[in-house]
Image (cartoon, rainbow, N blue to C red; front, side, top):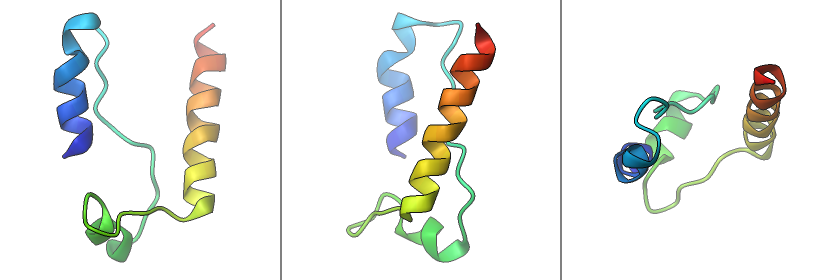
Length: 61
């Protein structure tokens, strides 16, 4: 839900480019922890997200 709220909050800044996804490969147990009291990601999942966005930015140029 947090991504959705952030996307709505900032949509006016870039109405043509508001993306609402997270490039995460996670299992069901991890999905259940998202946006909960003990929300967390595996360190490797966090690194994969960083890698994905870095590659995305590099390939846009």
